[in-house]
Length: 149
Length: 174
Image 1: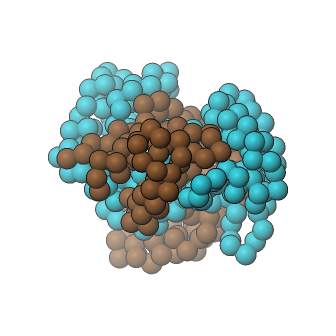
Image 2 (image 1 turned 90 degrees about the vertical axis):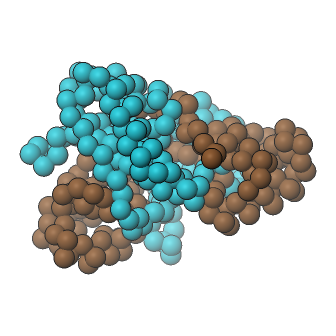
């Protein structure tokens, strides 16, 4: 990763130009050709450094979601984690250091869908599922500054 | 901030949730897929940016791939009356990527404010938690940090459900 890659990652998290040819506009700012901007972003995406180039949408503006937590006995963790991950409605699933050791996000087209998924997981595992929907979203204006070491 | 999304707006969100195509004219490409005019698509994206429905549009880095291996979910118990001020204080720190108020579920869960932090090393992550606690001062009645020990699944926003099922109409936010 060179200086140009770092600038692509640092300086274009927020304002991809709404220009018919946004990568040409970025190329003009960075002093490189449009096709090189595209090739670099494609390489960063293939390599996993960039998740995607696109929109970050405010949670719950289209569809509904919640954060769910479970206290899973350690000897069941693998099985329960696999069961949870298997739901297409689950898009994040993390093991965390706490008595509540399994945390996952459930997203559906509406709240009724979420209720069904949570009830189903609880029924299949016999475990309580905590439902922690977002009540307020505090906006991050500054973005997340990357530090290069 | 109120902005009623119509079916075309929702279709734009669904069509771009995995990212724009990396081609010379990405907006034209998405517009053609949706059967709308490219200028109309850019106009709608601009309106959704201004209303906050779309937070931002750009390069979305993968913190893990960049070496930010320590993902900490910091959770705080603050008085309901202090939540807005505490949330604003955490957002202003510059190292919090997401900050949400969520319900307490007593007795299982006493924390009502969640803030995600990311660091390359555990020591750095711990230091960020200390700085966050200092920023909250007396508003902080108790906190924990839950580091992730394993990512079991991480995919982007999915509104479509199973791959074979055509996109469903998405009801407006209640």
